[in-house]
Image 1 (cartoon, helix red, strand yellow):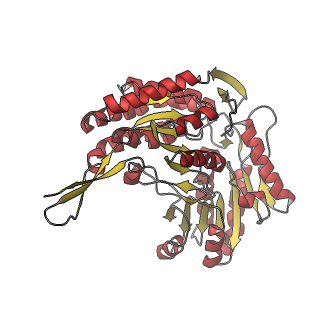
Image 2: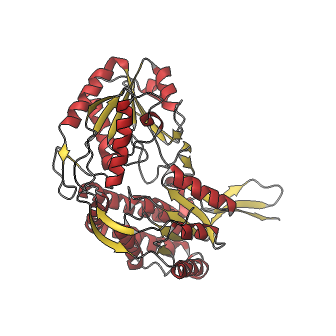
Image 3: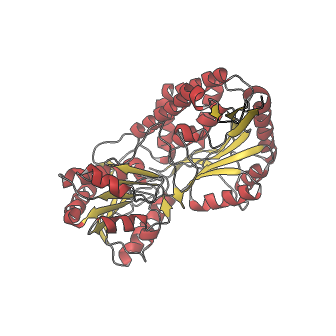
Length: 463
């Protein structure tokens, strides 16, 4: 991690207009944040009875519901998410807090072990201390909730470094934590620099690190955490296969795939970035996607109307995605629709449909983090699986067929952390999320999410 200067600022991606800036933390402020987090763990939170912790965590989560419209407005102006999607994200974040608060006693119950003679043994789940979360901009509330909620219930205290482009969202979450009655230091937002984050990772008071972000960021954090002998959880990129083996309604299948791809303007780790379609329906599938793409025009994310699309998170993101598309076209791929940048400072890139992508192209190897449907035509199940697994990523994947057993058989062969049959994704507060290969390691959500930064202590009593 190099000491790169960071500027925490809100920029409206629809207009390119800067809305506000926030001061980067001083070294003294970072040190004070760690002091408070460590003191809160030892004196005010880690030792608090579970029922009292869960009550405050539940109150924290309820505020995500109560203030959903306010949270949505900030996310929309900072990263371009539609108001409807942003409000839904805020409410789902509240559901995550509620799940862990409601299920804490069950999830943290002692696990009996067989022991010899008259001994007794159990596995206890206990907190470990201060944990650091490094979160991305694409889901500014959901990503925080799935990291913070289980750790707060467990008894850990949280230091949160959010993305530099969503400081307003980060600040409001910290306000909600205080309003919910979390003691000082239990949840602390820090507008830290890269080098400060490196020092936080190395600080002996910090016991674990969770990052959701790019491969590059994951590699840097993992290297620093490994050198400091700290556990980390990494949720990185994805290039999820979306296999359509057959369908009774090609138009409906394509429309569903397109809706999934355009969710959050394609800026989701587990979006269906590679649509792998049987050759018997591929041409009609592409035609339907192309029609859908051509009918879209730029729109205002704060006032979305049918037939419009929203900006990406920044002009730089839009330009980067346009360059990936152009690279593919220059090497022979077919651009059926979209892929053009709107003029001006806004971050609008017309949703695109690509086919004919081959291994030498960037679009084959790299994650396309935006509204681009890449369609591959395959002859049979074996070719579909081989193509699906020919990726450095292994986050999620989905298989569709009118024969559910056939889809299940193919899904069993996917090298991913989340395999789905006849649905784009299995989602819910109780469903773990995470991947394999270069998509990272560790799990969030569900019963697995609370175990990542728990001391699974064996408690053995003789006689």
